Image 1 (cartoon, rainbow, N blue to C red):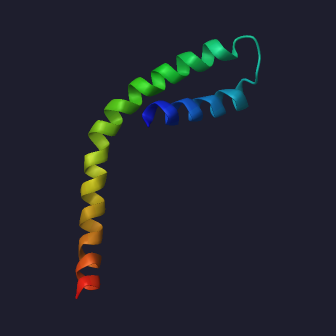
Image 2 (cartoon, rainbow, N blue to C red):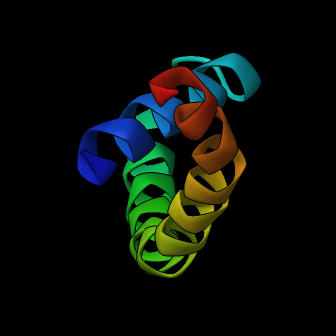
Length: 67
């Protein structure tokens, strides 16, 4: 999922900011690679914390619905 997400986001950002010219592919592929390298550790470190926060926030709601 991270491969596709970073690819799509970097494609959109680079195309808007740089346009489609002779260096587009080089800049996009470099940006995509860097984004992917940053995204994987971020997902592995941040996702469990976000999941815990969501579980905490909705734990009370779940109890009220069950009762």
